[in-house]
Image 1 (tube, rainbow, N blue to C red):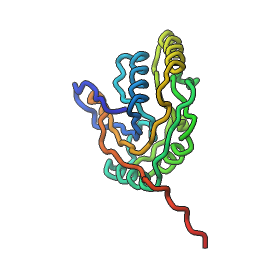
Image 2 (tube, rainbow, N blue to C red; image 1 turned 45 degrees about the vertical axis):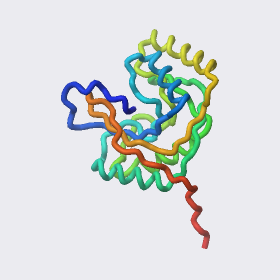
Image 3 (tube, one colour; image 1 turned 135 degrees about the vertical axis):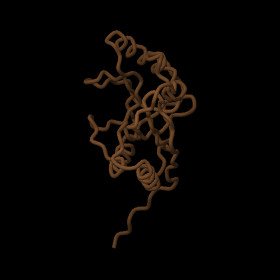
Image 4 (cartoon, rainbow, N blue to C red; image 1 turned 90 degrees about the vertical axis):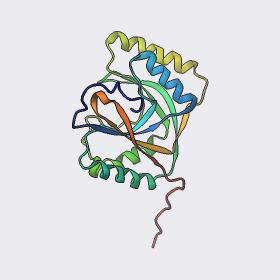
Length: 195
């Protein structure tokens, strides 16, 4: 997603798509960005995990932003730890699976995927970090081998905090752009009192 925008040429279509991401910063984010560019040199997407995959909105942009803010207030910040290099069998997308943080992302996705953000996703939500997609068979084999090699050699951090989530929009040739950063709650949400 985000944020390094597209080339900005051409007319932006009237039906943009939106997503919600948590960016991966620092050494880990830089490593993942560089690895993705090795596999797909034209990719300019900042390293991220998607909480809501791309979708058209079911309501107004303002309503979607309000829903995101409400859900973020109800969830405390958490850590995501990365696991193994994997492949989605139907699409041959190469990705990093999650060793921790998966349940929190699933819970947030369930809370977010409604109202103005409601969308019938073509695949069940599976939190992950995409490294390569839409590859030719030759690119896929070379990319998978490269990912496994680079990840085995990498000695930096393998986890990142999800403290801020970012609402993003894609308008075709205009590329992805950040609409709003929303901070997660810093305190755990209290359990409801039993009566």
